[in-house]
Structure formats: structure tokens, C-alpha cells
Image 1 (cartoon, rainbow, N blue to C red):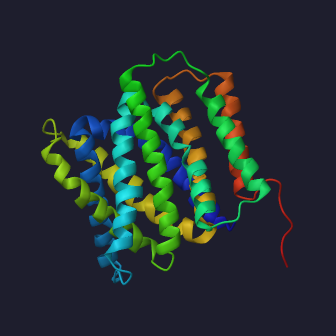
Image 2: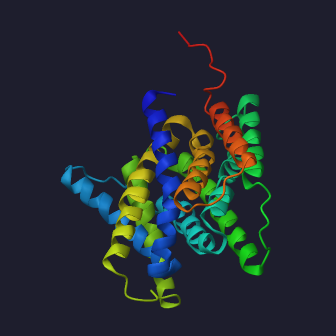
Amino acid sequence: MRARDIASYLFLAVAWGLSFLVLVKVVAAFGWVGAVTLRCLLASATLIVVAKVRRRALAFSLGWRPYAVVGATTVAAQLIGLSYGTPLIGTAMAAILVAAIPLFSMVISQLWGLERMTLRRFVGLCLGMAGIVLLVGFPAVPVTPHFILGCAACLFASLSAAFGSNYASLHLRSAGSLEVTAGSFLAGGLMTLPLLLAVPVPTMPGPVDFLYLAVLACVMSALTYVTYFRLVSTIGPTRAISVEFAVTVVAVLVGAVLLKEPLTVVQIIGAIVIVAGCLLVLGLLPPGRRKV
């Protein structure tokens, strides 16, 4: 991996790890449907304005269908699952379940013939999943219907994200990351807009709520997804989506520091195992020979 790809990988880990905290606040103010719809439309509008300022013409020559598929899966379905499930099970648990995305992506990429799974990558993914089990730490959490529903929603979000990432790698490889992000977020926002009739915004949000929404849409959606889709095109969907392992570590650490959630020794060991899995998937551990 190039230094730029490593920097992008670390940026996504930190930004998406912090996004769970902001997401809970946005959902509380705008509702889980409003959080998704407004986030998508604002993110798309931000990228269109950026393109205009940079005097760059957005080219959608591939047609609307691939952008609609990615918008329905990676954007709409994933964000709906997270927005609905995270308040039910908490940010740390949601982040842990989101780390299942690389496993789903590995299976899909193998079925579609997009990537060849090496032994090192397979071991890395297995380490990542083992680290997730350790990271949970087997807490004494009451298993209620709401808890089960929240877990199911987050797993649905993970599967949707994995499907959309592989689909983008297959059908939108020639498209620019700016076009992919702007088009898919616009499609996702338009798809979820009618749901506001069934689940309207609960109350009039305050100025701070709009600030949280702007951060979530402009920084943690628009900027991060441009970076992510560019990473998918350069290092492949499975290696790019393995960033969710690192996102889980960041989210749990932030929860422990800012939300005063207890962090056990088992969870610390799990975080170390997850980082080792990421390094294996990315080909950074052990260091390979430099090709001439």
C-alpha cells in the first residue's frame, strides 16, 4: 500500500469511529428516518457544490442504475440499519457488529470472482472476527426484543454495505469517487424521502442539532465516502472494507473515554487482535519483499 492509501485508511477509521457518537445525537433530534434522509441529501449537495467551486463537471455516463443500486445498499440500507439499531443497543455494540462487514465482503467478493483470497488475508479476517468476540467481553446485557431487533438491524446494515461496496467495485470502477459518492447519496436520500411521511421528524431541532447533522453529512459522510470509494478502486473492496475492524476499536475507545464505558482487559486484547488482523489483510504484517 502507498502512504496515501494508509493515510486514507487511518482517516476513515477515526472519522467513522467518532460518527457513532454523532449519529445518536442526530437520530434523537431528527428521528431515524430524518437522520438518514437529511444526511444523504446534505452530503450529496455538499459534493455538488464542491464540484462547482472546483469547476469540475460531474460525469454520470454510466447511467443511473449502478448509482441507484449503491445508493440503495451502501447508503440507504446501511444508514437505516445503523440509525435504527444504534440507539437500541448502544454505540459500542453497534460498532462491534459493523465490524462484520469485511467477513460479508470476503464471501461476496469470492462468489463474484472479484478477488482471490490468499491465506494471509483469510487468517487476517479470522483474527479480526476473533478480536470482535474478545472485544465484546461477554457483558451481562439483558437480551430483550429491542436488543435483538437492534442487533438484526446493524447486521442488515453490515450486509448491505458489503454488497454495495463489491457492486461498486464491479460496476463503478471507471467512475470517479466524487461521482460515486454524490450519485449514490442523492439516490439514497431520494429513496428514503417518502419514509418521512410514516416516521416524521419528532420535534423542531435546535441549532446544535443542525451542527451535528452538518458534521455527520459533510465530514463523516461526504468526505469519508469519497475517500472510501477511492480506496476501493486502489486496494480492492475487501482490503478497503477491513477498515471497519479499526473503526470498531476507535468507537469502543471513544466510548470508554467520553462516555465512561468500562473497558476490560479482554477488550484491550481484542482490540490488539483486530489491529493485527487489519495488518494481515492489508499486507503490512509480515512485511513482504519489495518488488523490483
